[in-house]
Image 1 (tube, one colour):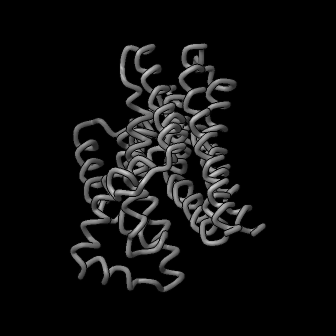
Image 2: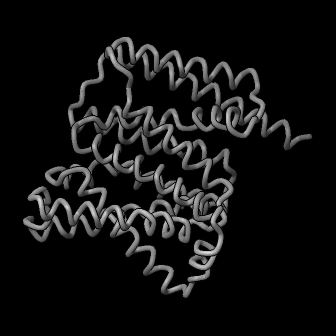
Length: 292
């Protein structure tokens, strides 16, 4: 139990520090950062699998069209998620990005109801309605949809839905997803290099090292999360998950100086209220089930 909590805290602490890493490479175009992130993440997880001598997943991927299609879709979702987050972190919109991850539990609830036909309790509907009101308020105040937060929340929600029943484990699944993304990443880097749009090739050794570090920076929190999920209850892990976006929100306001006025606070306040209602209801339900 203690080890599981430690793994979970480690995962979300590292995710909470993501803005610092991506701002360090903000001089590199977002699409190029994404391409390098795909390549170096694949290299890192393949190294882990080589040590484990674990290659049976390749046979599964090659011989099962349904598994291949599932991971092609999850690769699409994770590439959208990574790309939009990189754009937000490198263009002073970290607060917008945190919205997606605060909303993620409620997005999962809605996807469960719409896609898996799970029945929602009345309190869950109330939480979703309050969160929707918060998003509507943010939209009206800004004059446009908070597309960064919505895209991150929906893409990660669909990604979690696809991985919920995936045939491969955490490391193997990440390897499969990045392997499927590699052709696009390589093609884009080749095109950018021949059209004078690639900057890393003309950058310093520090830039190259940072881009190479995007592999372990991406994979290590995911592996810690997977280790935590095997050791502690999902309800406990669900409460820990707010650590990451909370750290990022504080960092964006206090360190990066992103604006967070009263109108924005009201919208976020509605979403936080929805999360409190959702979390308390979940804890009560689990406690009732546990006591028969």
